[in-house]
Length: 224
Image 1 (tube, rainbow, N blue to C red):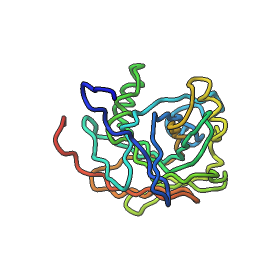
Image 2 (cartoon, helix red, strand yellow):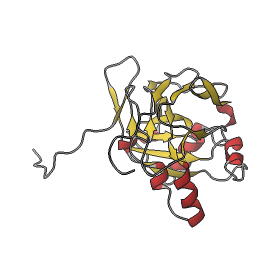
Image 3 (cartoon, one colour):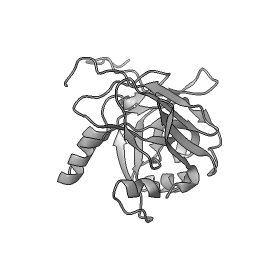
């Protein structure tokens, strides 16, 4: 038995739809600007370059219907609905879920302007709300990915609008990492990203997958 100096934290995980089992999460990789219209709204070239990636810590996950808190050090928190791929042995896609990449947009803009990493803008606590995982086949390209805030639709597009489809994303990521069981891949967001505040109710859906719903909770304690 290993004698720990400090007991290790609980392993982050996703519930599996209709089962008592859970999907243990090793890491979260994310694709930036993978929908042409979103690339345009962010001022980027929507042509088909190699995808670029950033990451979030596994502990950023918010699951099981919990509500993420509005983060510190931002006045411009944005929503980004995404198809999430769950990987198994050899980087094979074993299931999918609906996720939301929460972003401190003001910190991201500052980091971009100064050529700095995006960690504080993307990888903060509770920045990755995610619905239950559905094992098996992924949604088809005709499936609609959508997000509403307080009942008003802000993002809606078919998955076919992805610049890189799920198989292509996995193939490209495998050139950079040894993909395996427990990896999650957030595959990018369609146009329509925008600000949210404490008290806003978010409903995120992809046809054929369990939906994601949460309310942005007020910040409690910690840095302002």
